Image (cartoon, rainbow, N blue to C red; front, top):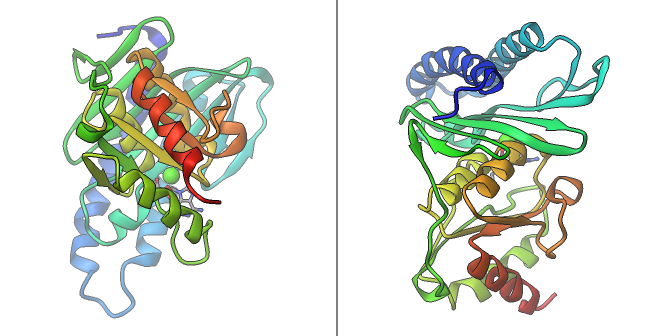
Length: 264
Ligand code: 2AM
Ligand code: CA
Protein backbone atom coordinates (compact mmCIF):
# COMPACT_ATOMS: atom_id res chain seq x y z
CA UNK A 1 0.00 0.00 0.00
CA UNK A 2 1.21 3.53 -0.71
CA UNK A 3 0.85 5.72 2.35
CA UNK A 4 2.01 9.04 0.96
CA UNK A 5 0.29 12.28 1.93
CA UNK A 6 -0.68 12.79 -1.73
CA UNK A 7 -2.45 9.43 -2.03
CA UNK A 8 -4.23 10.11 1.26
CA UNK A 9 -5.49 13.45 -0.09
CA UNK A 10 -6.82 11.78 -3.23
CA UNK A 11 -8.41 8.75 -1.58
CA UNK A 12 -10.01 10.84 1.20
CA UNK A 13 -11.61 13.13 -1.41
CA UNK A 14 -12.76 10.19 -3.50
CA UNK A 15 -14.25 8.28 -0.55
CA UNK A 16 -16.15 11.37 0.58
CA UNK A 17 -17.68 11.91 -2.86
CA UNK A 18 -18.42 8.21 -3.24
CA UNK A 19 -20.72 8.18 -0.23
CA UNK A 20 -22.97 10.76 -1.91
CA UNK A 21 -22.79 8.96 -5.25
CA UNK A 22 -23.70 5.62 -3.74
CA UNK A 23 -26.67 7.10 -1.92
CA UNK A 24 -27.84 8.71 -5.17
CA UNK A 25 -27.41 5.44 -7.07
CA UNK A 26 -29.89 3.85 -4.66
CA UNK A 27 -32.40 6.57 -5.59
CA UNK A 28 -31.80 6.16 -9.33
CA UNK A 29 -32.86 2.54 -9.11
CA UNK A 30 -36.25 3.75 -7.79
CA UNK A 31 -36.59 6.41 -10.49
CA UNK A 32 -36.33 4.01 -13.46
CA UNK A 33 -40.09 3.54 -13.50
CA UNK A 34 -40.92 7.27 -13.65
CA UNK A 35 -41.91 8.52 -17.12
CA UNK A 36 -39.37 11.34 -17.23
CA UNK A 37 -36.64 8.98 -16.07
CA UNK A 38 -33.80 9.82 -13.73
CA UNK A 39 -31.87 12.13 -16.13
CA UNK A 40 -32.05 15.39 -14.17
CA UNK A 41 -31.49 13.59 -10.91
CA UNK A 42 -28.32 11.99 -12.28
CA UNK A 43 -26.96 15.34 -13.51
CA UNK A 44 -27.49 16.72 -10.01
CA UNK A 45 -25.76 13.67 -8.47
CA UNK A 46 -22.83 14.17 -10.84
CA UNK A 47 -22.50 17.87 -9.90
CA UNK A 48 -22.84 17.09 -6.19
CA UNK A 49 -20.02 14.54 -6.31
CA UNK A 50 -17.85 16.95 -8.29
CA UNK A 51 -18.44 19.71 -5.75
CA UNK A 52 -17.36 17.43 -2.89
CA UNK A 53 -14.21 16.44 -4.79
CA UNK A 54 -13.38 20.00 -5.70
CA UNK A 55 -13.78 21.31 -2.15
CA UNK A 56 -11.70 18.49 -0.67
CA UNK A 57 -8.89 18.82 -3.24
CA UNK A 58 -8.80 22.63 -3.03
CA UNK A 59 -8.69 22.51 0.76
CA UNK A 60 -5.85 19.96 0.82
CA UNK A 61 -3.82 21.48 -2.02
CA UNK A 62 -4.67 25.19 -2.33
CA UNK A 63 -3.55 26.71 -5.60
CA UNK A 64 -3.58 23.58 -7.75
CA UNK A 65 -5.61 23.95 -10.95
CA UNK A 66 -8.49 21.63 -11.85
CA UNK A 67 -9.90 20.15 -15.03
CA UNK A 68 -13.41 19.08 -14.12
CA UNK A 69 -15.82 17.13 -16.31
CA UNK A 70 -18.75 19.30 -15.24
CA UNK A 71 -17.11 22.54 -14.17
CA UNK A 72 -14.47 22.92 -16.88
CA UNK A 73 -10.99 24.31 -16.31
CA UNK A 74 -10.21 26.11 -13.05
CA UNK A 75 -6.89 27.92 -13.28
CA UNK A 76 -4.73 27.60 -10.19
CA UNK A 77 -2.01 29.89 -8.86
CA UNK A 78 0.35 26.88 -8.91
CA UNK A 79 0.90 26.45 -12.65
CA UNK A 80 2.76 23.15 -12.33
CA UNK A 81 -0.08 21.11 -10.77
CA UNK A 82 -3.53 20.24 -12.11
CA UNK A 83 -6.16 17.72 -11.01
CA UNK A 84 -8.16 15.88 -13.69
CA UNK A 85 -11.47 14.96 -12.09
CA UNK A 86 -14.30 12.75 -13.33
CA UNK A 87 -16.89 12.58 -10.54
CA UNK A 88 -18.95 9.94 -12.36
CA UNK A 89 -17.42 7.90 -15.14
CA UNK A 90 -19.96 5.55 -16.68
CA UNK A 91 -22.85 8.01 -16.47
CA UNK A 92 -25.03 6.00 -18.85
CA UNK A 93 -24.64 2.90 -16.67
CA UNK A 94 -25.47 4.92 -13.55
CA UNK A 95 -28.54 6.41 -15.24
CA UNK A 96 -29.83 2.95 -16.14
CA UNK A 97 -29.14 1.43 -12.74
CA UNK A 98 -26.20 -0.65 -14.03
CA UNK A 99 -23.62 -0.96 -11.22
CA UNK A 100 -20.51 -0.26 -13.30
CA UNK A 101 -19.24 3.29 -12.73
CA UNK A 102 -16.41 5.04 -10.92
CA UNK A 103 -14.86 8.22 -9.64
CA UNK A 104 -11.53 9.05 -11.26
CA UNK A 105 -8.97 11.60 -10.03
CA UNK A 106 -5.52 12.09 -11.52
CA UNK A 107 -2.79 14.61 -10.72
CA UNK A 108 -0.68 16.21 -13.44
CA UNK A 109 2.69 17.70 -12.48
CA UNK A 110 4.68 19.58 -15.13
CA UNK A 111 2.75 17.84 -17.90
CA UNK A 112 3.11 14.31 -16.46
CA UNK A 113 0.45 12.33 -14.65
CA UNK A 114 2.07 11.44 -11.35
CA UNK A 115 -0.72 9.99 -9.20
CA UNK A 116 -4.29 8.84 -9.45
CA UNK A 117 -7.17 6.90 -8.00
CA UNK A 118 -10.15 5.17 -9.58
CA UNK A 119 -12.85 4.02 -7.16
CA UNK A 120 -15.79 1.72 -7.82
CA UNK A 121 -18.16 2.42 -4.90
CA UNK A 122 -20.41 -0.57 -5.64
CA UNK A 123 -17.67 -3.19 -5.51
CA UNK A 124 -15.65 -1.14 -3.00
CA UNK A 125 -12.57 -1.38 -5.21
CA UNK A 126 -9.99 1.40 -4.85
CA UNK A 127 -7.29 1.45 -7.51
CA UNK A 128 -4.38 3.77 -6.69
CA UNK A 129 -1.00 4.54 -8.18
CA UNK A 130 1.79 7.02 -7.67
CA UNK A 131 4.71 7.45 -10.01
CA UNK A 132 7.62 5.26 -8.94
CA UNK A 133 5.61 3.66 -6.11
CA UNK A 134 3.55 1.01 -7.89
CA UNK A 135 -0.15 0.38 -8.47
CA UNK A 136 -2.57 -1.16 -5.99
CA UNK A 137 -6.10 -2.52 -5.79
CA UNK A 138 -7.25 -2.01 -2.19
CA UNK A 139 -4.13 -3.22 -0.39
CA UNK A 140 -2.76 -5.54 -3.04
CA UNK A 141 -0.04 -4.72 -5.56
CA UNK A 142 -1.36 -5.13 -9.11
CA UNK A 143 0.27 -5.98 -12.44
CA UNK A 144 -0.97 -6.04 -15.99
CA UNK A 145 -1.73 -9.53 -17.38
CA UNK A 146 1.17 -11.53 -18.79
CA UNK A 147 -0.63 -13.09 -21.77
CA UNK A 148 1.12 -12.72 -25.09
CA UNK A 149 -1.36 -14.25 -27.53
CA UNK A 150 -4.25 -12.10 -28.75
CA UNK A 151 -6.29 -15.26 -29.27
CA UNK A 152 -6.36 -15.69 -25.46
CA UNK A 153 -6.83 -12.02 -24.69
CA UNK A 154 -9.87 -10.28 -23.23
CA UNK A 155 -10.08 -6.97 -25.07
CA UNK A 156 -11.96 -3.95 -23.74
CA UNK A 157 -13.20 -1.09 -25.88
CA UNK A 158 -15.41 1.97 -25.84
CA UNK A 159 -17.87 2.55 -28.62
CA UNK A 160 -19.33 5.79 -29.89
CA UNK A 161 -23.07 6.37 -29.60
CA UNK A 162 -25.71 8.64 -31.08
CA UNK A 163 -24.24 11.95 -32.16
CA UNK A 164 -20.66 11.05 -31.17
CA UNK A 165 -17.54 9.71 -32.87
CA UNK A 166 -16.97 7.81 -36.10
CA UNK A 167 -19.30 4.80 -36.01
CA UNK A 168 -18.00 3.29 -39.28
CA UNK A 169 -14.43 3.39 -38.07
CA UNK A 170 -15.35 1.69 -34.82
CA UNK A 171 -17.13 -1.08 -36.73
CA UNK A 172 -14.15 -1.63 -39.03
CA UNK A 173 -11.69 -1.69 -36.14
CA UNK A 174 -13.80 -3.90 -33.89
CA UNK A 175 -14.33 -6.29 -36.78
CA UNK A 176 -10.55 -6.78 -37.09
CA UNK A 177 -10.13 -7.14 -33.32
CA UNK A 178 -13.02 -9.62 -33.08
CA UNK A 179 -11.41 -11.96 -35.57
CA UNK A 180 -8.17 -12.07 -33.52
CA UNK A 181 -9.21 -11.74 -29.88
CA UNK A 182 -10.30 -14.25 -27.26
CA UNK A 183 -13.17 -11.95 -26.32
CA UNK A 184 -14.36 -8.37 -26.70
CA UNK A 185 -16.09 -6.35 -23.95
CA UNK A 186 -17.69 -2.93 -23.66
CA UNK A 187 -18.36 -2.16 -20.00
CA UNK A 188 -19.18 1.56 -20.36
CA UNK A 189 -16.77 3.21 -17.91
CA UNK A 190 -13.44 4.03 -19.55
CA UNK A 191 -11.79 4.79 -16.20
CA UNK A 192 -12.75 1.39 -14.77
CA UNK A 193 -11.69 -0.32 -18.00
CA UNK A 194 -8.22 1.22 -17.59
CA UNK A 195 -8.14 0.08 -13.96
CA UNK A 196 -9.08 -3.43 -15.19
CA UNK A 197 -6.14 -3.39 -17.60
CA UNK A 198 -3.87 -2.36 -14.72
CA UNK A 199 -4.95 -5.37 -12.62
CA UNK A 200 -4.96 -7.86 -15.48
CA UNK A 201 -8.72 -8.43 -15.82
CA UNK A 202 -8.61 -6.96 -19.31
CA UNK A 203 -5.52 -7.65 -21.43
CA UNK A 204 -5.84 -4.60 -23.66
CA UNK A 205 -8.21 -1.66 -24.19
CA UNK A 206 -8.72 1.02 -26.79
CA UNK A 207 -11.11 3.95 -27.18
CA UNK A 208 -11.37 7.23 -29.05
CA UNK A 209 -12.98 10.57 -28.16
CA UNK A 210 -12.01 10.55 -24.51
CA UNK A 211 -11.12 13.49 -22.29
CA UNK A 212 -8.27 14.02 -19.84
CA UNK A 213 -10.47 13.27 -16.82
CA UNK A 214 -11.46 9.86 -18.27
CA UNK A 215 -7.83 8.80 -18.71
CA UNK A 216 -5.47 10.61 -16.33
CA UNK A 217 -5.68 8.26 -13.33
CA UNK A 218 -5.80 5.19 -15.58
CA UNK A 219 -2.60 6.16 -17.38
CA UNK A 220 -0.49 6.28 -14.21
CA UNK A 221 -2.16 3.09 -12.91
CA UNK A 222 -1.29 1.10 -16.03
CA UNK A 223 2.27 2.40 -16.24
CA UNK A 224 2.88 1.64 -12.55
CA UNK A 225 1.38 -1.82 -13.13
CA UNK A 226 4.05 -2.47 -15.75
CA UNK A 227 1.83 -1.79 -18.77
CA UNK A 228 2.18 0.31 -21.89
CA UNK A 229 -0.07 3.25 -22.77
CA UNK A 230 -0.17 5.26 -25.98
CA UNK A 231 -2.73 6.92 -28.20
CA UNK A 232 -4.36 4.72 -30.86
CA UNK A 233 -1.62 5.58 -33.38
CA UNK A 234 1.17 4.68 -30.94
CA UNK A 235 1.93 8.31 -29.99
CA UNK A 236 3.03 9.02 -26.44
CA UNK A 237 0.35 11.46 -25.30
CA UNK A 238 -3.21 10.05 -25.15
CA UNK A 239 -4.48 13.14 -23.33
CA UNK A 240 -3.46 15.35 -26.25
CA UNK A 241 -5.17 13.22 -28.92
CA UNK A 242 -8.11 11.98 -26.81
CA UNK A 243 -7.49 8.38 -27.85
CA UNK A 244 -5.94 5.54 -25.90
CA UNK A 245 -4.53 2.06 -26.45
CA UNK A 246 -2.98 0.04 -23.61
CA UNK A 247 -1.95 -3.36 -22.32
CA UNK A 248 1.24 -5.30 -21.66
CA UNK A 249 4.17 -4.62 -23.97
CA UNK A 250 3.46 -7.47 -26.40
CA UNK A 251 -0.31 -7.16 -26.66
CA UNK A 252 -0.21 -3.37 -26.74
CA UNK A 253 2.05 -3.62 -29.79
CA UNK A 254 -0.26 -6.22 -31.34
CA UNK A 255 -3.34 -4.07 -30.63
CA UNK A 256 -1.71 -1.10 -32.40
CA UNK A 257 -0.81 -3.32 -35.37
CA UNK A 258 -4.38 -4.64 -35.67
CA UNK A 259 -5.93 -1.16 -35.39
CA UNK A 260 -3.57 0.04 -38.11
CA UNK A 261 -4.57 -2.86 -40.35
CA UNK A 262 -8.27 -1.93 -40.21
CA UNK A 263 -9.56 -0.31 -43.41
CA UNK A 264 -9.94 3.47 -43.01
P1 2AM B 1 -18.79 9.53 -18.84
O1 2AM B 1 -19.63 8.44 -18.31
O2 2AM B 1 -18.11 10.31 -17.77
O3 2AM B 1 -19.47 10.38 -19.87
C1 2AM B 1 -18.07 5.32 -22.53
O4 2AM B 1 -17.49 4.72 -23.67
C2 2AM B 1 -16.98 6.06 -21.84
O5 2AM B 1 -16.65 7.21 -22.61
C3 2AM B 1 -17.38 6.57 -20.48
O6 2AM B 1 -16.24 6.44 -19.68
C4 2AM B 1 -17.73 8.00 -20.75
O7 2AM B 1 -17.55 8.84 -19.62
C5 2AM B 1 -16.70 8.35 -21.77
N1 2AM B 1 -16.97 9.58 -22.50
C6 2AM B 1 -16.10 10.61 -22.59
N2 2AM B 1 -16.60 11.60 -23.30
C7 2AM B 1 -17.83 11.21 -23.67
C8 2AM B 1 -18.86 11.84 -24.42
N3 2AM B 1 -18.72 13.06 -24.91
N4 2AM B 1 -19.99 11.15 -24.60
C9 2AM B 1 -20.12 9.91 -24.08
N5 2AM B 1 -19.19 9.29 -23.38
C10 2AM B 1 -18.05 9.92 -23.16
CA1 CA C 1 -15.93 10.03 -18.05
